[in-house]
Image 1 (cartoon, rainbow, N blue to C red):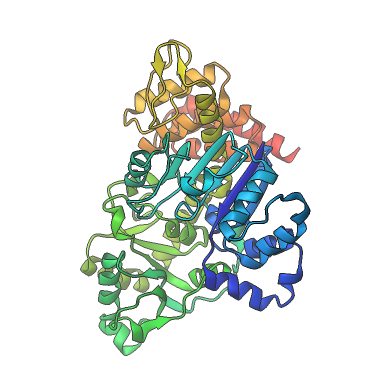
Image 2: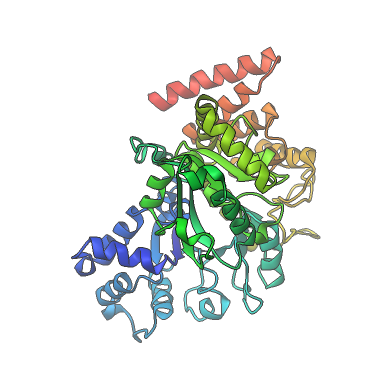
Length: 480
């Protein structure tokens, strides 16, 4: 299947890439896009770079990269009946010529239904990612599935016309765990990100940080790389913003990487920065939310705070105890690479795609209509009619095991993943998830599941023996 992904990059990042590659604008379209991607901007969301591993024919387009889009237009001028006049219109021409089966939209502000409905070619499935505020005037009626790590965005997408919504999260390629690995620790506390009206809580915490006596005396060195509307209180401490690989290099340079979520998330904690920090092997100190425990083990893989005072106390403690801090950072990185990498995410995305393609092709099964919230995979009587947002672990496992028993391995993985999000410390779900991956010949991903199940096996020798046997076989297959 053809997989086409479009997103918009920050203009300052694009300009910086072209400034550092003086002849890039004269290069072919494919070369320009490769250089833009190699710079690392939003790499955790750029799934097209890896979807070919799962058999897709993938293309990535930076929709607002004027010079790259101009190169594409010049290369394809003879194939276009009416030349586009704007960048969004160029993208419409690209859809019509590439004719993707799957369209993945990362910038739903620019590429929403009002634009995409103008295409002659209609993809079999259109996905839209959003984990930020959505304008009241937005039109999501073109999206078959809204993907988001935030339930409010999923609900909002459905209200604005999307056919379905699924929980989803970004993830960095495992290779980034080796990026800038020898970078020295320059800052005691580092933060790199946006500041503005949507980040009142973030500003409150950063203001408390810069007010620490140790910061004023220079005993604690900060690296605050801020973009946006910076208040007077933070300007003396603000460093120029960094993007792409420069951002990841900065994360390496921090002993502690601070994270404070955008205001709209409320108590739901899960942004891209968490996975970025952990992939880099840096100690993560983040604001707390009730769902955090399902992602990582507090004080073993990450650390959190619930107030500015607690943040300050923990900064002091972990700077004074480097061995404890670095031990937690190592465990956090291992968990992130095993469970939250790009390699894991593309398998998850593939299951969502295949599940919703089936759902779109068969709107109803008998008299039972599939839920718009998630892909239920119904079709045979024993399968429970539920959505992926179901909070009943037993029902999720029942659905996953039913699909596995029907040899629908790719579909079962989606449900095992949903079950694992509710009970991450239950070894059986990881074991069965691994078996489904193994059946699909996704050996590396299966190995990570077996290892997780083995680490959680407790006093169950039968489970540990079976996992160890399969792990041995899988290792042999991987290295054959």
